[in-house]
Picture (tube, rainbow, N blue to C red):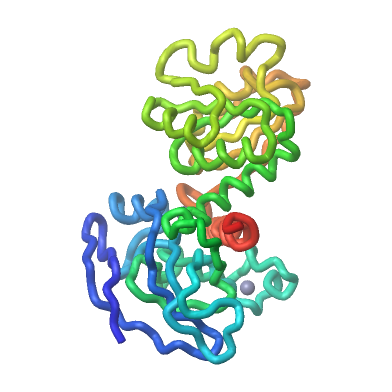
Length: 322
Ligand SMILES: [Zn+2]
Ligand SMILES: [Zn+2]
């Protein structure tokens, strides 16, 4: 059997091609993909041929944020049946390494993550008509969830994980810097977690509008002065209890420190290279716990990036779909 797939051959060389569909083994599931989200990493592969040291060195099917409908199941599969609509977990840990043995699959030393060029041969992705997956990768979604929404499970899992790093948000004032897809999902997750206020920032009004739709109580366009330097944010040692940094622009942190109250928490979600942290904006005695939630990209090494990708899966599987 064959199916169409979205294959990247090199920078800006994306082709729709026919690829073989594997036999469905007894513990596997054949899924017809119905929706897929384009991740920042997919964009980097297409626009730049990769990111940092991770380069496309052979044809790769992109895509890891996908959902679809079960077409057929192997004889031993009980979790799903034909016709079920599912979100697909894009992580495939080895099940054998010391971390997998310890139940910490997200730290797997031999992770295969859909649509990743970090390893060679590349781990092929899920932007294709039909795909054979493992039973454990299938997460059924409710009837009221569209496949488009289900495809958001993976990025939503990033947001849920980020929010979880901040501890209880009940009654807290939360700053979310950057209102792209991840930032917008973090806004929703923060509200869901009970934040009293969620202030979203961005350089663009269109993104801020989306942040409001996702639950932001207020927005700040930081391309317009004073932005976060406004007196109301910096007064009394800082307005926010928690900052969740989703831009990945290292320079943003220097604006975050002055608006974060002493003993506040910063969760770093966005990818960045160098992060300049000066004492100027971070006076001694503030004791700011910084939770580093690095995503794949930039200068991150493979092990760390795989680990982070696996984090997506863990939370996608167990929380996002519900
Ligand atoms: Zn993604
Ligand atoms: Zn493993």
